[in-house]
Picture: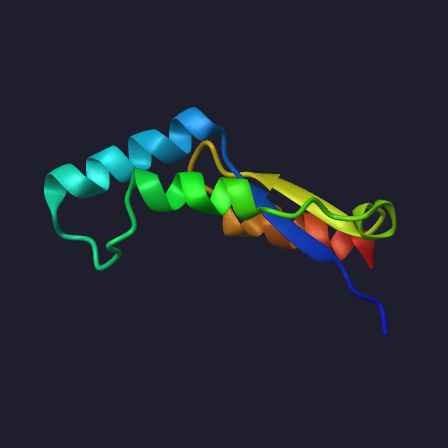
Length: 77
């Protein structure tokens, strides 16, 4: 069965800015703040060399285009 690991990534600055904006508006269901982000980053385990071979990295610094993501996935299979 073919598979891929989809890794949606954003820069640290973008993640922090999104959290700050979410905190300011107060209308997001997530209660996770910068402390949770820091904790997640510290606990993150990098993918193994074998896993890396199956990764499709998607940059989420900008708004994602679902069509682009789907096309990238289809190209791999």
